[in-house]
Amino acid sequence: MPPVVAPADRQDSPYRWVILAMVTLSGFLVMGFPTTGLSALFSEIAASLDLDLVEIGVVWGVGSLMGIFTALIGGTLIDQFGTRRTLVVLCLATGLSGALRGMAFDFWSLFFSSFFFGMVQPILPMNFVKLNREWFRSRQLGFASGVMSAGFATGLMLGSRMSATVLSPLLGGWRAVLIFLGLCAIVLAVLWALVHPPVERRAGGRPALGKIIGNYRYVSRFRELWVIALAVFGVLGLMRGLSGYVPTYLREIGWDPVSADTAITIFFFSSLIGVVPISHLSDRLGNRRLVMAFGTTMMAIGCALMYFVGDSFWGVMLAMVIGGFCFDSFMALKGAATTEVEGLELALVGSALGFVGMLQNIGASFVPPLGNALSTVALNVPFLLWAGSGLFATAVLLSYRRRKVK
Image 1 (cartoon, one colour):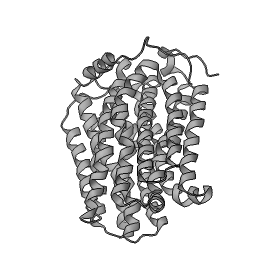
Image 2: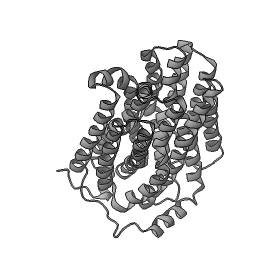
Image 3: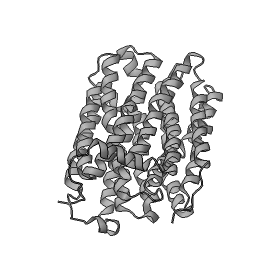
């Protein structure tokens, strides 16, 4: 059994490193790998289910559509029931709904199974972020968030590289891969039940609708939270659009499958290299927003380069390195910055994360298919839309001024 650690003592307990290790592993297996694993399998899924590029874009976006609403509810549930119970339930639900996608037989069955998957998976990162805030002090929070995002980045990188070219042949096709990843999430649910300390603050009663609305009315008054949320809207639209489209786009312009998957792998490998040092740099500078703005600018430049480089191998690789270098550090700092909004109570961190998650999932749901729809004009035009989404995030971040994080 895990040790009993009082909430007041968590930030000084050595057990915080066990929690960080579990958060990192969960980010790898439940968030990162399944995300790009699905995009890498899209060509195989499209051939099997007879899907076109627009339908692929819709399936890719609908995974976040329901998260627009469940992020709001999920944030309050985390505050209400605590991280331990919500982690166990959500990992279990993510595993079951994720495996259901492997049983799809046409566009609509894949659409609805992805829809259900998107109901629960987007809530999990909020749990991870709140756990880090509970177990780490501000002077270590950027580092802890960076390590957590390194797990995400490793999963994103390996999912794009291994799902189609390694796991699919090994396990017998895309269906078996999605079912296998679902089983991994179920195993993690069991591990969280065993590892997470069972004693934590409990809020009495059920989360009434009035309480949920009241929490979000309160957190929505923070202008800084709006700045973070709108920036995340732009970045997730860019990232989901780019990572979902690039493997298929490169195949369409004549690249072989291995090279096409390598490109998006380079994006996430670059992100993995940058995530911990850039996140830790924000601890040293005491200005997370400025570091985030640098990252959004880099992502926009890399995405715009994809419009100009055509089928040049090294041009594409350069665009992936530039675009990917700051992505996971941005996501790490997004979570840390949300929990550090000036005047925000720790008891309402889940609601604040839910508010940001709502805007995040709106961007991830609508910006990618909008870009995919532009592929009917020219195959490289979607990259301009997604680059503009990144520049929007930069403009929003630079529009706000606050004192340095202590």
